[in-house]
Amino acid sequence: MFILFLATLMIPQDVLVIPMYVMMQGFGWVDTFQALIIPWAFTALGAFLVRQFFLTVPQELDDAARVDGAGAIRTFFSVMLPLARPTMAVLAVFSFISYWNSFLWPLVIVNDVEARGTIPLGLQQFFGQQGSEWNLVMAASVISMLPTVVLLVLLQKHLVKGIVTSGLGGR
Image (tube, rainbow, N blue to C red; front, side, top):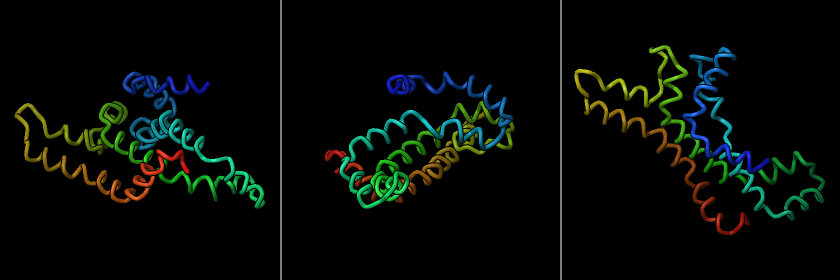
């Protein structure tokens, strides 16, 4: 089952656009923010990354929490989840950058021209039949990078910790 789950990583997202559009139309979510966010919020990459991290956590930590009287839920929230912060930070950065720069899905799912508020679709408006306004394109491109830079600065501590502990098996 896990191999089938990982096999979905080999399917390009462009292939999934039509079935996802039909599903979003069935939910009545065309032209909504839910259709932009929810279909791609939970991916096989995220599940694989988090699973691999939790496999590296020593069983002794779980056993120690149980000896101290913590149940499964408390062990998860008090012990395991704080250990997973670097992994969650890496996953947040990867996901944010991937979907912040997404062009095809917002183009397909948002039909209202006024509601097309994503950055790649906005940058496309600077190109027309009369030519391109490169000064505006470059200014908008720099502005579109700011949220990504802010996210990297905010999560820098966790990202560095994730890189440092990656060679130690999570210990």
